[in-house]
Image 1 (cartoon, rainbow, N blue to C red):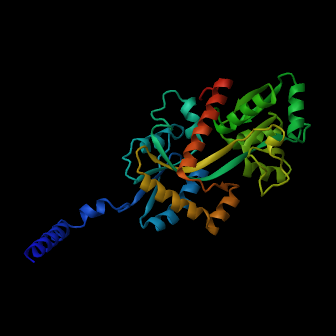
Image 2 (image 1 turned 120 degrees about the vertical axis):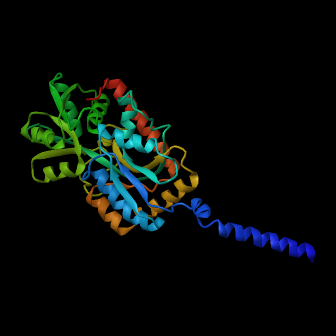
Image 3 (image 1 turned 90 degrees about the vertical axis):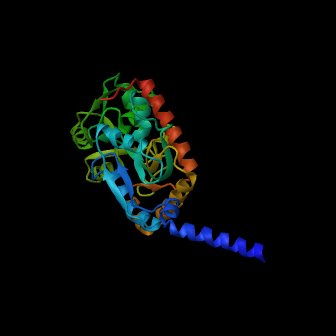
Length: 326
């Protein structure tokens, strides 16, 4: 009896000590117990910013904490990405990233971080395609006709891109390589001026944002020859996938959540589970449809594999075409 009472006293004393120390020690092990920062490495208003903000509210509700979206723009996304790469891996500082992370790994030799080593891929939200477009003055109506026309021009073909070293530029370089075309790159500062010159006939073709390209085609200003996704888009089933003419051609932008390297598997798994659940909501489905995006529902491991494959693919295109940054 004495031993039992002694044991009981020790147990009560231990409980009393833990309670006396306050909730702080216990709370530190419970994530999340304060607001989270979601970094967007670009200015407000772009697709990345819009997606990050559409995720922040439902994800915050699921976690029971506020998620603050913070734009840290500059150096083509490098400043904001570097901020997260160097943050503590405690689950309170996250990055809403995209395809430039995959491209810059090779394009920028002095990058202060590595997408392979300095980030923990958590969950991809969506993939978005590009559209291969030509002006109405170009006498082609299909991907094959553009390839044949290009080969007949003996190197006089040119193409536009919204910026040198961007995914639209590299998609065109991949297209050139796979099609056996010779064409000169004409870089612009943004998609709108590139589109204007394409409509005016100053350039032959370009890979443009799918939504704006389809809008211009519907107004009769451009011709959309193909979509860069693996399959046709449900929203535009009449537009062939470029892969139907060039097997293996696939270019899509990814939009997903990453943390610093060393993020715990428990936090990664929790975030992945909540994001994939949110992706199935009717509100998110409507948002994606309006932006011509396709939800992915990947595990963190699948997202990691995709980033590695994407980064390797762009590395080959950059090296083969000897692409340099602006």
